[in-house]
Image (cartoon, rainbow, N blue to C red; front, top):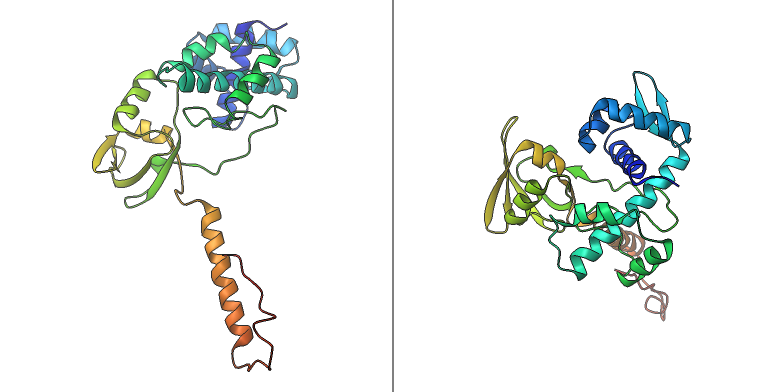
Length: 260
């Protein structure tokens, strides 16, 4: 049986691995959890003894397969709880992280199953973070990019925001920048503010906040491909019939219906 603190460490290491390639530095874990480096070193030793992490001196820590599974289970609980608190108990999205941190360790697998079913099997939480599936398989890569990496004139949809800082979440909420919001990059100052248009208003974001916001193409690749396929099919049909005279009774009977 793992303690709540051990599970918190495994979850933190997973989240840091998700942001950067492993191994994860103990200093990064200390900053993430707001604890001292010696405290992290002591806990990492305990986790390594249980086979939950691999530790390489002077390089950092990486989850083992068993540690990854535990982390994904805790994250699934956490993100389902955040979704429930927001959708059904009218919690603000700035409040749910701390509540879920407490509850995530104390729900049964049956409760988790029923909670997911009641919510309609959501795939992301209120902040856009992917909810691990029930089989605890690794979430698929999203292909999201950072808002700070875009140029003036780019139109993007907010996909995911960091939930670590309540003040930052409140700032984004007041600015109307939440997952699903489409924004246009107005200007990018060198090493400075990123200004975006949200509806009729403009909002200026510090570079650090813009770098923490993940965005995607608002139209999606699928829609673009579908249109391209339809145009290609039309072109192919034109080429096939160009210069041909259909024989009596032919043409209409043998035409294929193209799905747009």
